[in-house]
Image (cartoon, rainbow, N blue to C red):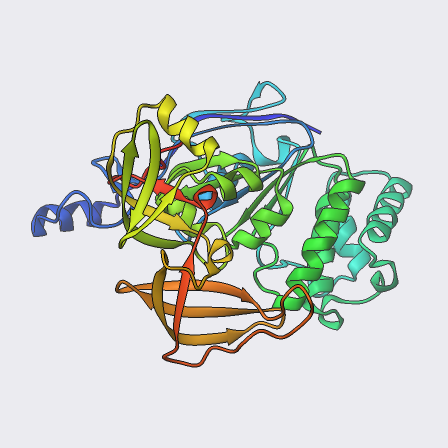
Length: 395
């Protein structure tokens, strides 16, 4: 149980001597990757600030190379903090050794000792700390029961499945009863079915142990289902912090809008119009009046008519036979059981439309062949408007 506070954390990986000489010799530009390159080195994490409450479950999510694992490793003490301050329960931790931070970490690889039994693997960190034998036995058996691996305590890791090994790795972390439990993509080595099962296990685990969680993943589904709040990162910068529902309903920018949600949000070139104080969005001749809530937000910020990128989620698009609609030609039709994902082309853009396979009376709807034309529309309440810089006009 602990609070964490990260204040303007920066991680810079210095250039090696060879890199400096090569750069001078070849005259390479200052920025050759998505990460900022300076004279000091490559900045992997930029001005990361976050306050984490006691027992909160925080998920860092983003594409590979965005700095999420580096941030986690700085909290653990496995990476040095270049700039900024890290506090755990109000105590400055920048120069505190990892073993003295009262933190446990679960890695992507299980990192179990193959010659030890499950019991011995879980007991090992307590043995190193010279915890009394009866206390070790109590903690190991308690953790094994929480994780439902009691029956495997006498087995070696090679006799376990991937999911069982990951439970052992988690068990080895929680027997230490840490203030903070860090998890670095712990489910990425598992197949899809096991990942779903283990997500549920982690949610149950969180309810059974009193600790603060900090979890890293590139899978937005994991982030949405596990986190109290999620931190979305890109190129070392925080893009948005919020509850899963907040970032889904109110993405701060185009990156967040495209990253959160499956299938990805659809984008259209559009114009934001204002007529007598009423905002509407116009797309290829179709005009949609925005909802009252959106009207208030835009009016409060005095947003002027302009060209925008309009975002609409696939599940918010509806097929319509009306006159004021958009038209698309179906390229691919994916049957997903209770719904069909139509991949279509509209105004030169790829559009995904989710269509239920049954109507409200339980009757099967029509199928959509390749090349079929569909007409669609959407309500003003589901429109997301982004300006020329990709920022959400309502944010």
